[in-house]
Image 1 (tube, rainbow, N blue to C red):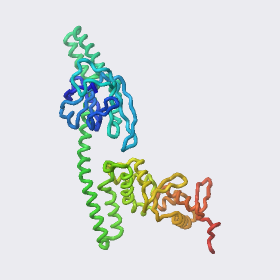
Image 2: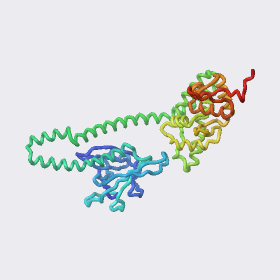
Image 3: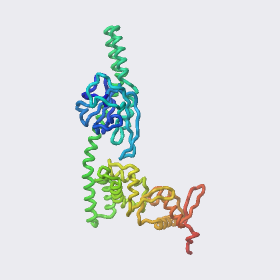
Image 4: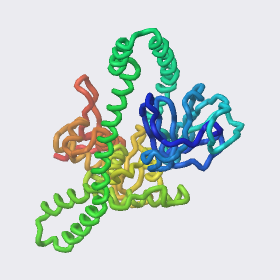
Amino acid sequence: MNRFAYIEARLNPNESFVSRDRNVKIYDGDQKTEFEEGEVVLTTHRLFWGRPGEIARAAVTLCLPLYYVISLSEETTASNFFGRKTRIIMHLRPPQADKGPGPLDTSRAAHIKLSGKNGLSVEFHSALRETISARVWEVMITNEMAISSSENKAASGSEDRLARIQKRTGIGGIERHLEAKAKATDENIALAFQDLSVLMAMAKDMVGLSKTISGKIREQKGEISDDETVRFKSYLLSLGIDDPVTRDNFTSNTAYFNSLAQQICEMLLDPIEEHGGMMSLADVYCRVNRARGLELLSPEDLLHACEQLSGPIRLRSFPSGARVLQLESHDDALIAIDALEQVQAATSLAVEELAKNLGISLLLAKERLLVAERLGKVCRDESVEGLRFYPNLLLHPVEI
């Protein structure tokens, strides 16, 4: 940290903006510092770190000249939200004698670490590596020396022509083009997030309104047809949930997963009943995250929560390895009888045909037929035309 200096966040004449990231903390070697949850801005020459809003106001912030950076590496650590996250390690040269005042006068560490709440963004990581590799500050020094030498030898007309060429070509022209492109991108992103903030502010009220209307529909069901009630309820439920369970509200994983399991059960009970009492984990993952909006769940958290379910829904694993959520009242005997009725109605069925008839995935259709086969209700016929299932007349002969 003794390479950082306190400097106003302003670009120098030959300096250009490259990238930025938010919620970034700085480590002095392996030691945590007080510089957390800040914004970091990368330019062609320096790295700025400031509290939210400080860099935009051109306030005094931490600044690390990139000529201190010898190389970059990375390390992977555990994250409470997404499993793993990556930190950037910047290996540094010793501080120069004329360095300005900074957060530390001395430090034993020869490197610093940049870390985010969920890891640094891929775009910032890539931009930092490319900037360090390009070493634009060294090229600028070389160019300035070459231009200075040529100015001493060339006439004033040659100097004007060289200046005009440099505006359009070379590193300066490329940097100006990148700066203009980055500025336009930032404006578009800011506008997009402005609209998103308005939408998210209204989302909770909309979901609350949907629950109120759903309650009124249940109370006055006689005044609305069943088809209209079911259709309108599906529209309202598609809006999502107004208070998703998040890890921030709990101090232990056990309490978090138990509460998350309860919410998943309440959310999926009706859809699972409508899908024949069973739903694959892939469909569960899509439905839950769609309802949660921006508070997305990782596959690991969803699986841990499903393992805590105790009723009326439970997690089931089939011998094939497929895992589903299934109603406790929906046992194998009922599944086998239902599959047998479907097969008898069509004389024989393939997996694809059963999936189409019931409106379920191929995975669930196959598992239903395999359950019926294990209980002796149906038997299979494998041929060049594929796999088909027939009623098992050996164990259950048809009475004439």
